[in-house]
Length: 454
Image (spheres, rainbow, N blue to C red):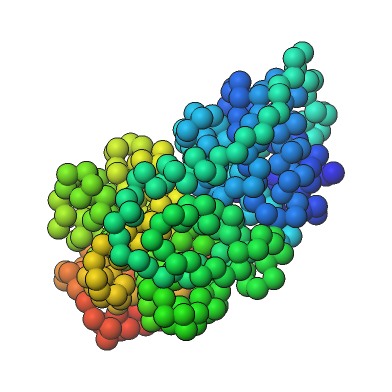
């Protein structure tokens, strides 16, 4: 096929429509390129439940094997299960998934041994260049001695590893509704939760990459509605929703109200600090709530603020030796999980915290949800730079106002802050605001929006 790799090779992964933008032939070339760039003698490959995933995954494996690389195929898995395999086996890995994208999409998330990320600056550019070269000149010559393809089951080992990191044996019995969105949570949750003092109410556990019930993207409030209704109807203690490849988890309380990912970040940070003797660095991106650095300091830790995006978080985790990191998008990163993100481990922390005391989840998380926030508000603009300059001009020089440019523009005072970031792929500005109370937040939000949309 003729392929425009600029359309499918993103900053952190490969993603596009199958077969319009890429197919198994191209997957084979990506496998060969991955083998060459990582210079590995062996790799591990897994895939999600999308109809195109088994064929693409096998083509990638064959492409790598043709270059002399031994391939361990772990079959159906969540993305964090692939990271587990990469870490435990100390092998580079490739996961075939398009996460929460619609059914016609598929993609590849790649990592080096120990689940170290592969992105534009860490190998993905070289992989793309090789594939483009081979598309023009033909596939590379196969190795004299091809590699082997072997199958290995890792689900039980993955579950055991997670349960060893969070002790749930002594918690009070809990009833939990889990919405897997027909994604990989339906594959991993029954094994991870087996034998724990939990009554599991499953929703949409059937693996179906056509997503017949709702998109597997809990970041969109429309996709949480079913879970929000089901939790109080069941008299459950909480609800958990996973995205399509089950590397992110979202939580709703006993009333069906969503719990902010910033509150989950603060709760897990407090637990990880306690587990590490009350000290350690915690990574948070600059649009998580101010609650997060406050809770980190209150529990003896050191907060480290980063740009938005998992590559920045993972880089800071590695650079600082941080024990935990969290994002507003419900990605949670753990030192004890090779600095990789795992929604399942975050979910276990929430269950352990809730089951270790008698109150409801709404009361437990209230201490970690201190300030009203706007959520992310997108505005289409003709000129991103001009609008950012207008915001700077409006606030620069005001008493008590601080400006910084770590990621977009952040404007802050002791009582409130907001951040405006340009989208890298669309003509959008993204606004997040937070304040000490709801009226102040609404005022600051509306002020900023008026300038952005002028």
